[in-house]
Image 1 (tube, each protein chain N blue to C red):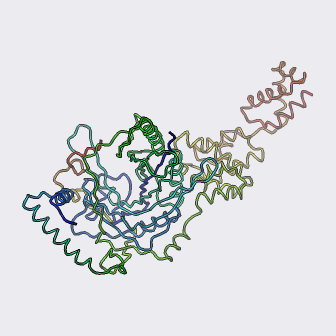
Image 2 (spheres, rainbow over the protein chains, first blue to last red; image 1 turned 45 degrees about the vertical axis):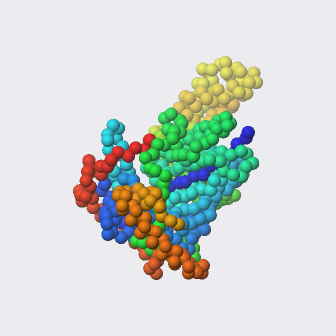
Image 3 (spheres, rainbow over the protein chains, first blue to last red; image 1 turned 135 degrees about the horizontal axis):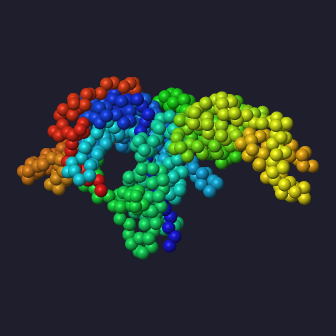
Length: 475
Length: 96
């Protein structure tokens, strides 16, 4: 039988506010244990939480960027459960009246655009961190993260392959980074993802029994765990077995999912409206104000790069995938006539070095103006394209101005005909075989001779000029 | 809906309350009388009344996103029965 995979994603994203959602403690990552806490986020009796306006606005902006409908009336609810990362024994969240509903994200699949629905976006507070040390009979709790504002983004079960899940996550991350509501760093826990996956016979409109996956530490883990789980479920179904509805944990090292044995009994959260927090009423005016403050989103920007700059769709996709990269690119293009040349340098050299060194775009130590200056030095013949790569790397290492690098390292291209003629003559003398080949009509042999001249000058010779001089000398 | 002893036990367990058999019976009876009262209220036609999420007519109370000083750690941990290296110490939570 042929099966169809059905996947849904639940993503939690920490918002980039300075203070927590219901109190004034800092949200800064990585502080000393239990030093970002106050009576409110510690859940002391008698305290009164007050919602952070910025958190609400960031959540609305995110919902707008995800094409959601913003609720005119929404409220906070208490989700009750006992767990030591939650000092109040309830999490303040939103239940039946979330901030926003019915949005979507568009991803590109097989050259076409596919829309993945978003069921809801709601606001809630983050929980603390538990530390379980090996072989100890207790756990340790750090409540610094308790009360950091989160949005939960729940997709519709519209995703059909692990690849689509990966594309959805990447697009979601790009959008949230564009609108600057979250830094989406999975390694710092500011973006977390749980998935659920089920299989059903192709053509069926009923859902199969689903399995929830947890402990997904990277986008790659999300994809791999879904691929594994898809295979596991298919094998069970093909043998006539039944899927058990359960939560499974991804074991990154072993590349498998294993059932999560949790002490928690079946969840019964007994949600009810939080009497300490008054409803949020969002009028059109507020929505419009926030909407008008949104930057150009990645899809629109990509379209503009293709139409306005004439970039290939692939280049536009790669560059707009990161706002910082696209901003860098655009600053260069505003000062340089040929966007494609800029795109080539940004995509191959710049991304190459960033990947190689594991650095982020905001760690590039030079300005867009420096890259433009370097490109102009290639254009006016000061340096060759080959030397430019060396200069570019040096710019990365030192952050220095390309002119200074070229001067200090003596990398100026040799365009002095007399000087080059001297070297060309020497190369001709030393390579009689190639000279003969060339004279016997093997045009390609000249390439070897040009290469020898480049070698003699350590790449500094102007290759077009060398070519011309060699031809003159040989003919 | 009738509250049974089982329902009381379930809810008590969720709230980490430990009730004696007598207390369970008493609780079941009291909860049932509350529900009976709700039934009485249900006799009213509320089809044109929006559900009440809050009883006070106040909305949009916010604070600005300003960081304020947190508690010194020793203060934060002062009520904790057990602590270690600045952490709250709790019975082991097994996740897998």
